[in-house]
Amino acid sequence: MSTSADATSPTTSLANHAYEILRHRLIMLDIAPGDPINEAALSAELEVGRTPIREALKRLERDHLVVSYPRRGTFATNVDLTDLSTISEMREALEPIAARRAARNLTPGRRADFTAAIADLKALEATDEQRTLMERDLDVHRLIYSSVDNPHLSETLIRLDDLATRIWCLVIPGIPDLVTHIREHIDLLEAILDGDEQTVAARAAEHVREFDKTVRSTLR
Image (cartoon, rainbow, N blue to C red; front, side, top):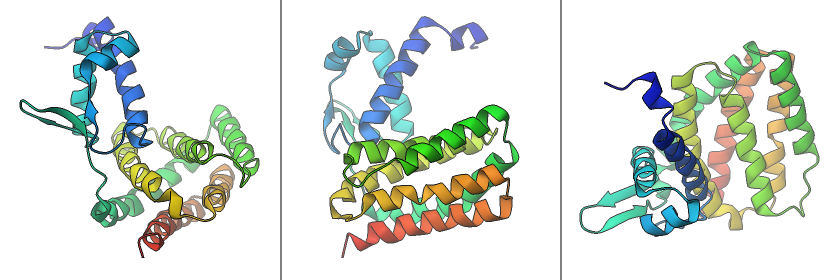
């Protein structure tokens, strides 16, 4: 039986650290789809033992970001564009719930965070690097998910958003005006600050539909 002490053990902490780093590299395609995962190299780079690396990879496999094969090793999963419909279907149902809860659960601290996020989005320029734009996109979604006060909902949405982000990164070269798509979050965040649950739900659903439409436009 695990205990609360186990949850905060040094190995668990190191595994969490490795997990966060590797997850970010995988969803941003810094580790390309299909690339092998070298446990020894990661262990040396991150200065952690092999056990935390393996624990992190187990979690990433549950997230569908890596896949392991007996006697072959572990690899970054391929980005399957045919998954877009099912991911969008789930997100269109759940993102409005998250947006409603974020609007309902505002605290002074969260209000400050949302206000700062809006300022960051307004400061974006078309000349900004794609990496910067994608990081802002991720930040917005993580901010909303962290405000829902429902760990099951936030964990599910993070996993779906991770998979959607991999698709997004893959098709970015075909998107002529990326900054405009990122700035579309501003209206959503402002509605959250207004506490308008009906409006935020509608805008969250529309954002998912627009994402799906934009991705599909690059595949023609």
